[in-house]
Amino acid sequence: MDALVNNKQTYEELKRDPKPALQRKLNSKILTLKKTDAVDTQRYYRLRCSVPQPPKLYGGLPKLHKPGIPMRPIVSFWGSPTYQLSKYLTTILQPLTDKSRRKLQSTENFIDAIKTVQIPDDYKLVSFDVKSLFTSIPLQLALQSAETSIQQSTIELSLPTEDIMDLLNLCLTSTYFQYNGKHYKHLHGTAMGSPVSVVVAEIVMQHVEERALATCRQTIRYIDDIFTAVHKDETDAFHDHLNEQNADIQFAKEIEENGKLPPFLDCLVSRDNNELRTTVYRKPTHTDRLFDQSSYNPTSHKATTIKTLTRRAQLVCDTPNSLRDENKYLERVFQKNNYNADFIKRNIYLPSEADETNRNPTPVTTVTIPYIKGTSETISWILKPYNIRVAHKPTTTLRHLLTNVKDRDEPNNRQGAVYKIKCSDCQASYIGGGVPPASPNPDPISDKKMQFPTPVFRPGLKTPHPFSDLASKVHTRFQT
Image (cartoon, rainbow, N blue to C red; front, side):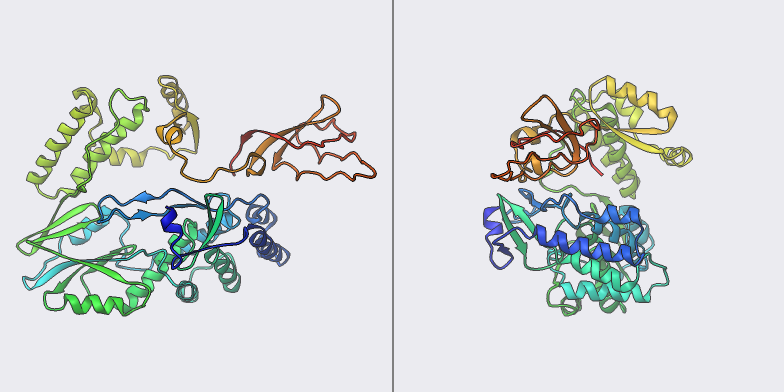
């Protein structure tokens, strides 16, 4: 990761933390929206940033299936100045991404789309994907594409176009992050980890699609992955045509060999005369390792593992022979992970379960509790009649014990903290929420005693109390 962030063509090390300036700029814009009644008071306080955290670069995920095992940098945006704003803009812009007739939502959509497709003998199956999509999109292209989509849309949006574009520009240009105590800026593309970047990427791809794929009928797309059939003598020309749309957005190409196309959406696509057939694809790095039956994990997670894999087999394998082979393979995998035959039989996915799921009411709320074997399952069954879904969270994981994937917050700077400060003269203490007050600098001449902020849980503390030492103790955190 050190070599990655030290690549001066991609990242620039900053001399100071840009967080305070970004926070002031954001809060000023949100206040202006409130004064003009563009947002109500509740939305204002939701978007306003009071205790910002810098976006943090994770250690990165290795792409084991690619030559050289390159690293995929992951940035956690939670708590950053523009995080809530980015989520809000995502809800505004999301409806604009539904206009493409070539857009795929899932593997199931893909299989339905190619069921009746007939491929002539002189055509080749080809897939294209953008190289590093999120870090390749130029800022101006992103803003222009978003503005064009807004202007062409008949959907009534909750903010004027000018305000949306102003806020979107602020989010997309916030490309800094923290790593090993230092601050870096990503020089190209949209902000990594920002929720709105995903929506903007889809909008940009729709505009590329409109220009580049207008005359290509048998083309479907999942985000930046394109599946199509091209005349065998025109594959290179079509590839060049895609890459000419924008110098920064470049596509990689894969062509079918021996009647088989490299995997698309976890499907291995092959030809059977002029029709297309699909089976389940697994990467060469796949290990068959699942939750062991005896592992300290929720029973519901183990059951869902069986349901998910058997459902995928039924969805993707489009011939009786391929489905039979996949089911035999899964049976060996389940036995390898010590699942007993009765547990497997009870949790195999059945098509009728989809209708039953649709009839069941959607849970009105979800609660997350630490997983304690036996106890957590009992709580789930107790809450189920009340239409409350329980999510189980592990108390300790090997990841937490063995790795430190991102910079830790200082306790006194944590967002959403409940903290305790003791008086230096007596036994009184102040318990507050949000963030501890900044360290005081008592006047050395008058030696004035400082007044605590308005108490949250101790309203009886009305007399001034000195707190020369602000070694406050953080008791817990809450998330909004």
